[in-house]
Amino acid sequence: MALNRFYQEYQSKLKTPEEAVKVVKDGDWVDYSCGVGAPTLLDDALAKRKGEVKDVKVRGNLAVRPVQIVEQDRGQESFTYQTWHCSGYERKLCDEGLCFYIPMLFRNLAAYYRRHLTVDVAMISVAPMDDRGYFSFSMVNCSTRAILDTAKTIILEVDENLPNVYGGMEDCVHISEVDAVVEGKHAPLAQLPVAKATEIDEMIAKQIVPYLTDGATIQLGIGGMPNSVGKLIAESDLKHLGMHTELLSDGYVDLYESGKLDNSRKTIHRDKGVFGIALGTQRMYDWVAENRGLLSFPMDYVNSPEVMSKMENMISINSCIGMDLYGQVSSESSGTRHISGTGGQVDFATGAFMSRGGKGFICMSSSFKDKQGNLQSRIKPKFTDGDIITTPRTQAFYLVTEYGCVNMAGRSTWERAENMISLAHPDFRDELIKAAEEQRIWRRSNRI
Image (cartoon, rainbow, N blue to C red; front, side):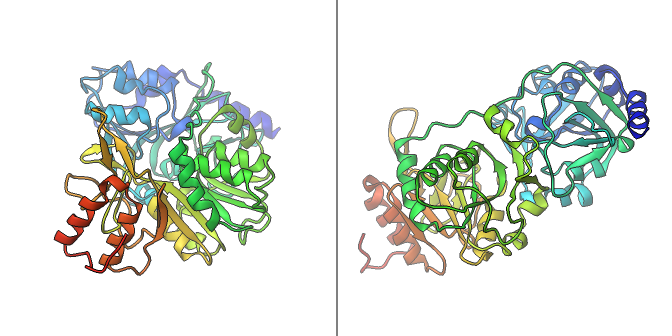
């Protein structure tokens, strides 16, 4: 009887994508959710309204497919697109002036929606409805519930490829809350290939692994370097590791299959791996589907330093673009060119420090080659070209390159300069020393 009642309500709200998007009007704010939770059928249908509507602002996050309201309206006649965190695709849009970044800390994002933002229409992809009338947010808990709580109109796009994923809180929406439902054939879920680790990535990973202990709870960021750390851990003698992470990636599958990840020593959510977003390959998606050993939580919980403070040996491992001699970290822009976003780096650096036995690592290669093939240092005397400071020097603790790992907690400016220069590529150390002297943060007795 219950199934029949919920099914009837579902049928009564079923619309075509073209019918559903007619609710969008001039000046509206529309939200698309995140990653594989972004709608594709609704996006296609809304894009067809180019020229019919004006000044429609769309928020996205980590887009993994081309966004049609952008691609079909590159002159921004009807639509303006903005994102909370740039994927590689959105970075290219930013380069062309077709996407605008919204600064945030991930732990605050739900509060932004509930306290400060307008959502006229929310369009999100969900897993198929269960027999109690609930739709799982699948692999995108993130801040989805906060978006829906704020929205004046809720449209669900049912993606038959999205698996049901268990959650700890705010992980679903009921048919009774929904204004419209759309269905249709979807392409397979977009995948994020595992970045191939470089020799330098592996060197950096070797700097970190000696700091880890049995029973540690691990957060891995995205990219080749964190995956290299995950691979080294999988090959190490470490055991009984836990997972508490903003983004669940394939590196955790490696840890699980190697027998290292069992969550058995976590001080909260024992025996459960906790995450906010899952994005990776089909292998990882299959692992997440209806896995009783995993729980999705909203980002204001996952990324809460207070939550992390209740865990012992919380280890955070993230990457960045550049650092300066003061220990400031830039992870989201190169000069004024936007690359990614703040995300949860500051959240986890803070939370790991608050954890008993915890450590927060921020890593990068010491140098890179520019387009002309010239070697450039990632460690600068100071940031002066518009680089966004993601993690302030007061929250950046363990900093790592292929040349070492330094702990900046409680260090004075001359100690910081000395530590940073020890992490630099040898070709740049003399000029960095000269800069440190000019900036009055170098002792004459210093030696590298």
